[in-house]
Length: 290
Image 1 (cartoon, rainbow, N blue to C red):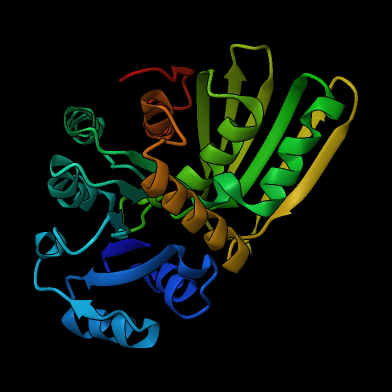
Image 2 (cartoon, rainbow, N blue to C red; image 1 turned 90 degrees about the vertical axis):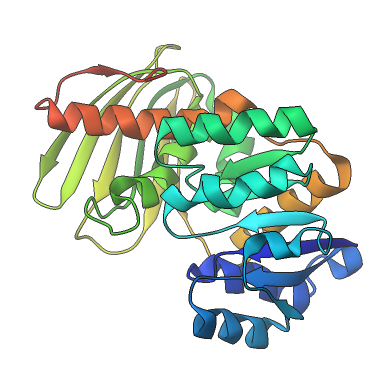
């Protein structure tokens, strides 16, 4: 059994993952959440009680030796490096909820210790493996080469949890999964609370992201291929969190990472490029290492 320790009780994902593991037993005896830490003691105790987590600790490192895998889910990405590094340095597998971090310097602080200790490390939006995204991915051979695509979802540019990094990452990761990691350039324009991003892939595909600041809470993806088109609303919640939990447990069981270092960095690089374009009046920005 994989004993999971959760870092960060302020995110709804903490309770979602813990209930799936401890209450719903989605993966049976393969995993259990054994410990939790959070900055707010009352919130942390509430999550622990509701999800039957046996141990609440006063600092994250207190779980070392008691768990087999750490799940870092702080809402603010600036906390992720600080909270992931102690576990990676001890060789423990770590899942960091999106975003891996906000600054690329923090991303580069997180990745090398994983290689040095041999720890498995991953980070992704739960929507990357959502059932509807899996359906679209399975349709790619039938659609043929993707020529154009549109992805939409909520995004508060002024979020106290890191601005666009808190939610734009969802939309970006859906696009990376379905069209490819090789985004060459982006250009972004803001109108009111929302942003439209024009995207060029090196494989010839074009696309757009609608980052919606004041629309209804929905995610959507549309693909136009050489041979057909497909569209889905992308729904989060229980089945999507269950798929994420399964990916975490498989990584802990096998030591195999579902994403490469480059794939961990790409969403963060692209959101940085979107910010740079907005700051430069919608200029076309290369979406590479910054």
